[in-house]
Length: 156
Ligand code: RB5
Image 1 (cartoon, rainbow, N blue to C red):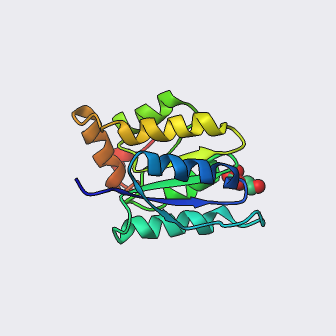
Image 2: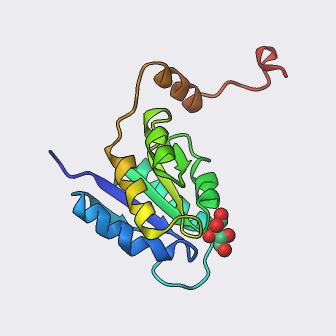
């Protein structure tokens, strides 16, 4: 089977986890595209999220992995694009369910929230969990094609 590629993007807040996660990806047999940041200087997390989103858009990677201080900013930036489903994960259960229920294709971690070992565990579970299909597929389709909120049928 062909090796899958993971694109990783971090800001200064996420840098601490990067090398351990890259090591773990290697151990699990994944190729890695490291899109930065490459040093501790303060940077803007959306810049790195957008690099990962573009890499996924053009098919140069199969899965995204983004890390900032909390995972929140990165996930908000990533989820602005319809081909992205980024889940913020702080434990192995949310890692598993983000795949099983949401078919997440991007894992967002927070280096100020999650220690290095737990982050590696979350990554492993995320990569090894299949999408649950069935009723979840219907719901995920609704994420890709949201209704026009001006329609009367969607009135509050
Ligand atoms: C940077 O200080 C911090 O705001 C960023 O890493 C992230 O947590 C944003 O959501």
